[in-house]
Length: 303
Image 1 (cartoon, helix red, strand yellow):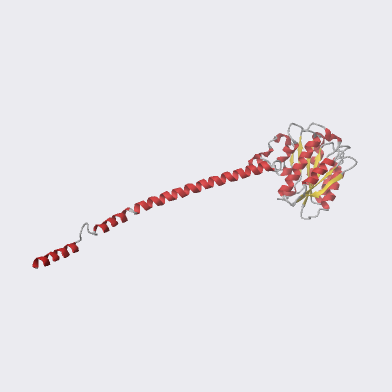
Image 2 (cartoon, helix red, strand yellow):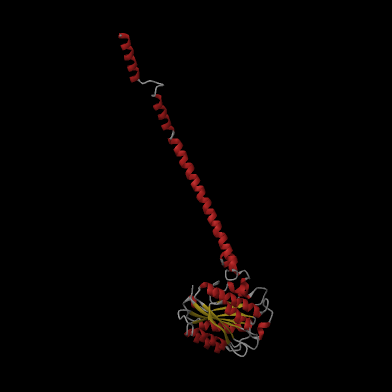
């Protein structure tokens, strides 16, 4: 899998208090952040993920690039919801964090959760996108909450940052998720951001349904429930081993029956030969024995 350094930029503005997503925009975003971290680190253990917020007094790096899930959880817990989002500034700071990554072999990616209106105009966003493209940084957007207002601007950003990109692993994506009873994290499972879909955008991601786990083995996403996925995999392996053992026993039994049949057929003739051999032991005298007896009688008569 791709070796990446990923900065997650979360939205902690006042808009995240809204309850149009289950259970709220902030809680839905937190669950999705956890899932993205697990997906990236499970895909490649050497990949690292960082976290920052883009609202309040200003964008703030909450956690530098790490493979420690506990640090991400602690950073999410410490984040407070207030102020308005500053998208452009947040992305630029994320770019600086990626620039100073320790492993230069890691590809660079920024994943931005946008759950509030974007204040920047489209021209400023396109200019920023071209700068990111020049620095080989891919950008993914999870557009939710204010999707009707933000989609046009984000489409223009993705088109600029993705222009001429040939490497599929460095494609940028836009996933737009409208409100509904579904979980934000469930909708991301089948999205191209986590490798579950094709193409550079999913404008109608809400229509994909909540059962995005259909593309996973056993229908269970191992990043969401690793214990269940492991139990199902072990159960399958045990069943396969049991069937192989039964097949081997059956083959061995058939082979023994076949060998036994051949042995009984070849043993009848030797038994008959043995009887013939035993027939010369005295029960049926041979011609030579009869001549000896006759000569002995003649000698007795001459005397």
